[in-house]
Amino acid sequence: MLMCLVILLFRPEEEFPLLLAANRDEFYDRPGESPQLLSASPKIWGGRDPRAGGTWLGVNEHGLVVALTDGPPESFVPDRRSRGLLCLEALHASSLAHLRNWLKEECRQSAYNRFNLVASNGREAWAAYGPETIRTESLSPGLHLLANRPSIDDPETPKLRRCRQLLSGIEGEGAVPAVRRLMQACADHGDGGPDAACVHGVGRGTLSSSLLALHRSGLASSRYLHVNAHPCEAAFEDWSPLFRGGCRGAPLRALDSGGQEA
Image (cartoon, rainbow, N blue to C red; front, side, top):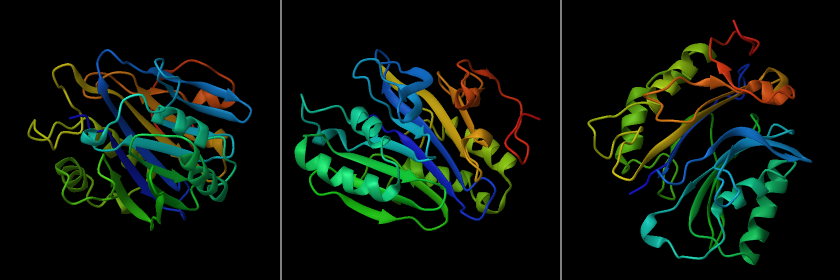
């Protein structure tokens, strides 16, 4: 069973009000492309699924972050529209209110398999579950975890229980140690069973890991970290230059309080 992971640390009063980490679990024959400019108007950045053209995590020029996980695999129906395209098109929204209204209308018009979605602009955050009837819930400040079940912070998911233990106390930490702990959690193998965040399965597993650190002043001081491999085996690279017109990842060093390399 493939089980993606989204970890959201939402602290709207902090300099980095949103830290969002995501592991993409997929079949090994469906690798994703590294972060890139996905749309020029509005500007959208994210990884790309070359098979369907969508994304699993992205941010737009308005500072809106959207991440998506698949629903339970037993509910999968072939030939429905790619959920990655839903995530990409959701990033055309200019606000969370716009996104919520668009999502409800889109799911009335198009057939998708079950999905879970989180969205935030650093001031508000919510989760949504679909597609039959879009159900949304606002997220309070703090740590939130999402996998494939349609429930944020689901206590029945071993992976989420393990991540919450690993990240105990992270709400009170600064951005630098919090980012470090999030990367460590994404690379964790647990006991090698269903509690593993970094999955090494037969034919499928964790193909990449991403971390967005949204700065309260905007994208110019935000950070986009990504590793296009098992996060336990390779180093995260800094793709933040994308926000300033660059196109290449660079070795990750550190964050200072202003979101720049230190």
